[in-house]
Length: 217
Image (cartoon, rainbow, N blue to C red; front, side, top):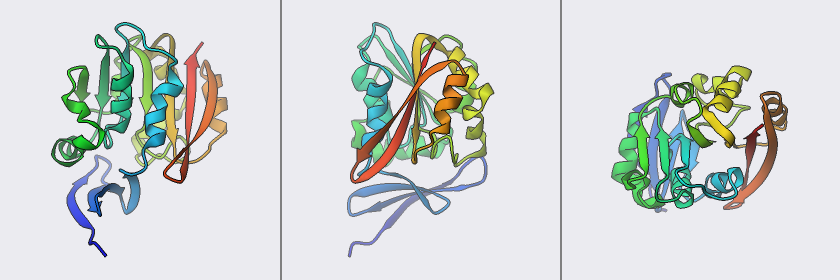
């Protein structure tokens, strides 16, 4: 049996531990002993862009909350036109370093694309500062609205957070939120915040996750 390698460790701003592991060619990012991301299972992250937007538009801007292993950013880059931009907000500097050193090739090195703008900051601040700036917002920052892994992320799913997301979107824009489990109550929260909401179950590598989409009314 091949051993598991611990490639790097880091501490998140809230004090929780973060670890990058590799086993038999697969990479895992663990948060406090929980497998947060696994390189072999990423289809649901890649589906977010297509679920949020039917077709690209000239000069469109997409905000990706959470770099992770780069799969969500890659899906956005594959969708937007040459004059578009993908803003990637990643809170943890170590995750950026891991992408540059280990993970980049998994998703075609999204940080090297000229259309990528990397912001090492809390996606909350990017949203609050970005009124009317984005066509699509993709949030893959934790386990989803029912169980955020970082306390700061809870704000994103509150009425105030959803209102800020709505204001950061251009007219007709959409937000897509990844969730490890089904959470139907979030559909009601999106609708109450001024979105037309829908949810999809997505299967990837024998694992099912949920993506919740809200189109700004």
